[in-house]
Image 1 (spheres, rainbow, N blue to C red):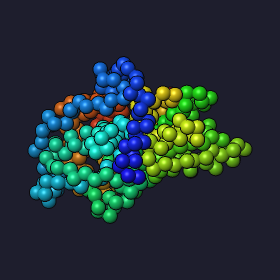
Image 2 (cartoon, helix red, strand yellow; image 1 turned 30 degrees about the horizontal axis):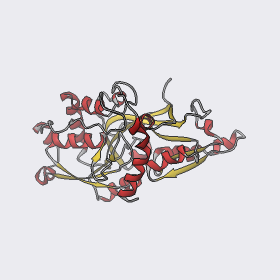
Image 3 (spheres, rainbow, N blue to C red; image 1 turned 90 degrees about the vertical axis):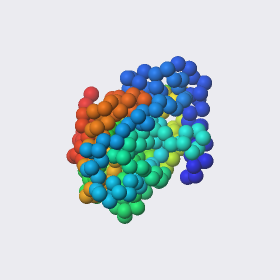
Image 4 (cartoon, rainbow, N blue to C red; image 1 turned 180 degrees about the vertical axis):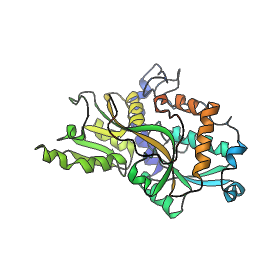
Length: 316
């Protein structure tokens, strides 16, 4: 989808929010704006420019990377608070952007960023087209077979519905039987939904129908227009989006997943990135990024390299 088309769709899903007033407390789950900023506005707090290079961390990079001083990064864009184009259609914002830029500052390298579709990034890492990728990539055991991750937040899977929905909670995917479910193409949500689809028939119920969209804004339009009944997506993304749109509500968390920078399996970059994330936690930048984007509940204690997938639904 073209950048202009994406911007137009993003404008549609945020238009209603422009008439709202008030502010959100960043300490609350899903608060989408920095404290004191009106809903519908992108947080603008600068949390990156003051970050300094840390030589002891930068030395963990391979020598050829230190000499080149650049890394090629692929970024998938979608909806706040992850990574998205602002209304001008050219400026990239979001927590993923801030985290990557802050890590680059610690390492003393420049990121050569290219926007790519979510489903195209992981295969492109294997081919060597990019050095790393961002896109709210959840760490799963299947992905760990071919991809290395350096974790920086904990997000996961959740659901959102229209205000008039009779659906109260999803504790098992068979709770969706008979419904139209929207989600992003090439995501862990699509995989989980497709894998569990036969279970409805096993229970003697009508299967749910999975409708996938390459553009996140199209997912929300399908829900608002009644073409789908429930949206499965990232916990942080859902919580942010429902604060910016009338007539929608966050349903519940379903499963938590660690989220990380993605690398080709065996990449020599992972130790340096892990140390850089932990440096950001140490100097306070990490917490400032989470506060800016209203995602303080997604904090991790320490960055890890390709940890095992978190199993089971989110505990109640």
